Structure formats: structure tokens, C-alpha cells
Image (cartoon, rainbow, N blue to C red):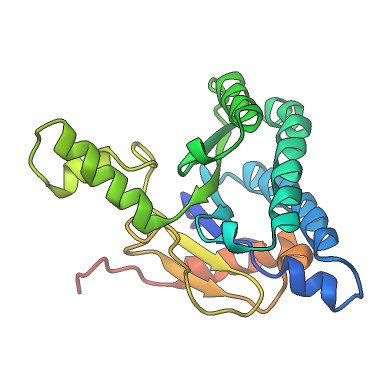
Length: 228
């Protein structure tokens, strides 16, 4: 059973695809394929239990440094995932949104991203946010430059209004899989007061039941937001 105190916004660093595959004598691409299936399972589960926002770290600004063939595979996987998920989003009333610098992607991938965002705009059960070519420092830099370009004062409110996540509530619960204990340039601004959980489970093995357990623990934590 999950706690009655649900986080409004869950963010997940989906880590461990490559190691999961390696331990099974498989290619890293097999880990990414399985990881994509888990994305669907976790997304559908979050929508079912009443989570409003789910942000998944899918491809970082640093991931371009991976081997060329792996990057090419990830781009094709992302394109195929979005094409396949359109009906799933609509069936489950899930809105899709992408954050990050999308200009670095191919025109065909940008087109699919924009199409899925447009087609799911009216969905209201939950918003799934994929962080694509995303880095928090890059996001904050871009936001500050937007504020400067409009000749407005650099304030917290003006920066927030120009972040990729403008209009989306801050992260309540941040999860990282695979045993690594760091947040890797992910939603630094938005996670200022997030509760953090680190699990040794590789992402391809991450199950809705484990998410429920984490949410239950989240409900037991006392969040003070700097107060007493």
C-alpha cells in the first residue's frame, strides 16, 4: 500500500541500463530497450495512483560524449518510443512534455516531439516530462539569458518563469536508481527542497511496487522547507 501523502511531482534519474545489460552478457542497447519498457510501466502506474507530474532524465547534455553508435541507437530508440507511445498517452489521458535544448536533435526527432506534445496538450490525468539533451546548468543559463533579452531584472521569479519547467511545480520526490548517489546536473533549481531517495536497483528492474514503497517512505518524512 502507498501512503496517502502523495508527492505532486516525482523526478527520476533512470540509471543502470548499461550495467544491467553487461551483468547479463548483453549489449548495452538491450539495457536501453528494457529501460524504455520500464518507462511505460512507471508512467502508467504514476497516472493510475494520482501523481500529477513525472519527470524522467532520458538524455543529458553530457550523454553526447558516449560512443557514437550508442548515441545513434538512443536517438532511434527515442524516436520509436514516442511514435509508439502516442496512443498510450491518449489512452491514459497523459500529457507529454519535453524539456532541454531540443535544437540539437535531428529535424525528424524534433518534429515527432512537437507532434506528441501538441496531440496530448488536452490530456489532464498526468504530465510526463522527458528531459532530453537536458542539463540543469544549461537550463538556468538559458533562462537568465532570456530574462536579460527582455530587459527585465534578474530575480528568482523571472528566472523561474523562463526555465524549461515554467508553470510546473517544484520536485517533491527525486529518485535515482542503480546505486549511484548524486544528482548529475538534473533539475538543480527545481529540486531545492526535494526529498531524495537512492536505490541500488537498476532502472530496467525498477518496479511499480518499489516506487510505491518509496512513496510510502516519502509520506513519513517531515518537510520543513527551511522552517522549524
